[in-house]
Image (cartoon, rainbow, N blue to C red; front, side, top):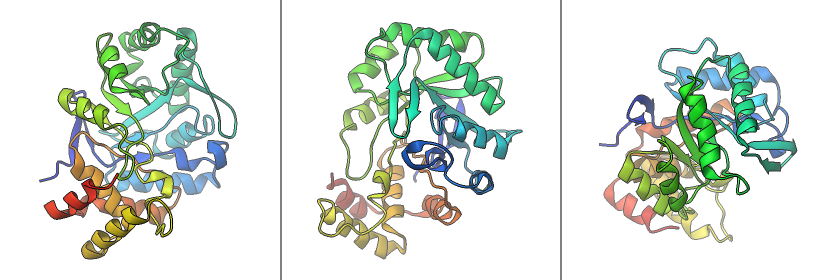
Length: 289
């Protein structure tokens, strides 16, 4: 039986298949993707379909995604967990600058609270560790915000297993976000560590930034797509659905939050919860990387 629910920090129950908001922004994660009403419709439909984990970030847009979340979903229904991120400053399309000074992290968090219309952010994730600021100072700033009631739980994005171990010595960590999908498993050691400690792993690019949703014959992914397509056909689903289903079967701590600006694609993604992969399916998919 594949568990449908994961308890963030053992406290906040969320359905493991969530929704990510990055695709509600334009090229380079800059500006809006299109009409606000379309994004609002997607967000509302996600919640109607039972999504209880919305993953966003202050720099998607920047600010655009958080504002859309509030426009679409505030006042938030009971049980809906909003996760956002801070620690990166944007100056243009695809321009990302890490900023981990405590005073800046505080300012970012408080700005997110205002945009999201929240008193407390359920899960606040450090978008990147700043190599120029001691980890203790960065996590100390988030711990202080937690003591003030502005953050409920702390997460990390794009870290190694060693960095997570070091962070856990400083404070409680509820989640990590690293790239992880059917064909990219560089973060496998981190996944094992999360399993050992009951930490949620929210894989970004769960569909390989789109590379796992379509036929890629003639590319390095051709073999993987062949296996995925065979299994998809057997189950009457798409290769993208197969890739998401593999994540849900792979580990009980994996909580993918695939993003899309399309209602049709959203429905396809959320239908994955009904897909049941057998032991042979998983063996064939596990062999890919």
